Amino acid sequence: MVKFKCQNQNDKINSNVKGQISKHGFYHLSFKFSHYFVISALSFVILMSGCVSFKEAWKGFNGVSTKILEEQRPNAIKKTFAYNYNTCYNKVRAILVKSDAYIYAKDPKSDLIAVYVSEEDTTPVGVFFKEIGPESTQVEVSSPSTYAKEHMAKIIFDALDLEIKAQ
Image (tube, rainbow, N blue to C red; front, side, top):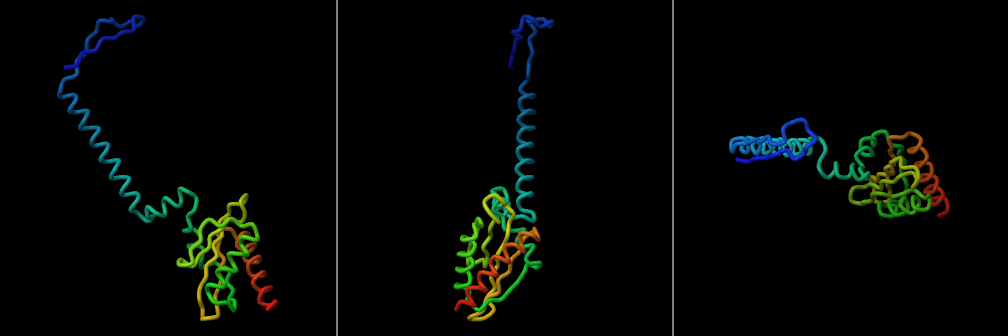
């Protein structure tokens, strides 16, 4: 049994009021809290196991998700160049650095370099690579923004074309 006493003398309620919470009340409160905890935990697990993986959700939270770029890939601007995969990948990466694009994800194994147009303009642009042959690689530029996609494609494609003509 728990007893409490009101300490505020300014209240119109008699300050000598005593209340009691039985053991049954404590069990009832702990039962409610444990149910809320279980419901919250299950909700979190269900939400995280849906369409979005935990890893992708974390990337989205941190602002480095590439999912939208992969979804826009069918609408990408594409061009094939006479370079092997590794040479093309390295040349495009150098072009992006030189153009002041902000690279936030790069992985040759996933065939992608993800950039923001600049450090100020955080419109995401994805540059995908597809090996066509031993000396031929297709470069695909995708973005949810048509302007950003066309802008970055022009920078990349013009620089690669210029290098091919210089050889």
